[in-house]
Length: 171
Image (cartoon, rainbow, N blue to C red; front, side, top):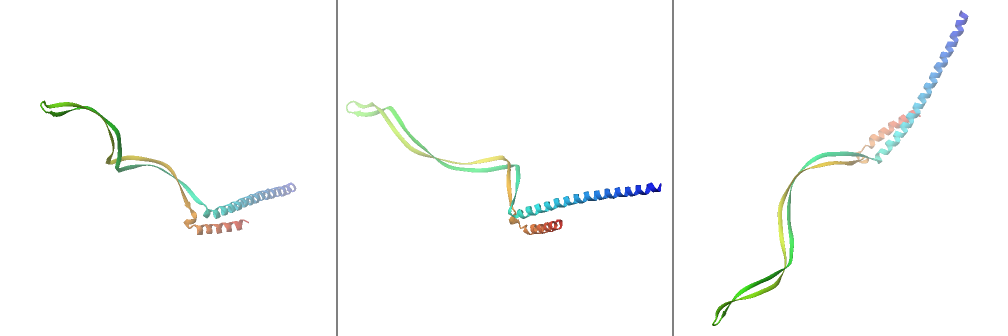
C-alpha cells in the first residue's frame, strides 16, 4: 500500500505545482496587461493636462426666472401736422347802400371764392406712461472661463510631475 501511496502523492504534488504555476502565470499576464493599460492612461492624462492651459472651459448657464418690471416712461414729443386744403366759400352777403332820395337799401352780393389754407400746426404731447408687468426669461448663456488667466499653471505643473513619476515607475 505504501508503494501505491507514495507515487500518488508525488503525482498529486506535481499536479498541484503545475496548477499553482498556471495560476501564477495567469496572474502575471493580467498584472502586465493592467500595468500597460495604466501606463497608456497616464500618458493620455499627461497629454490632456498639458493642453488644459491653452483651452478654455465653456459652461452653459440656464436662466429661468420671472422678473417684475415697473417703470415710468416720460413721453415728450411734438408732432408737426401740415394742413393743406382749399376752403370753398359760397354765400350771399347783404350790403347796406345809402341811395339819395331812396334811402338806405340792402343789396345782396353773392360771394364765390376758394380760399387756400397752407399751415403747419405743432401739437405737443407731454405724458408719462406707467408700465407694470412681469418679464419671463428662459435662456441659456454660455460662460467661457479662460484657464490661462486663472493662474493654475503651478497646480498643473505639479500634477504633470507626479504623473511623469508614475509613468517612469510603470515603464
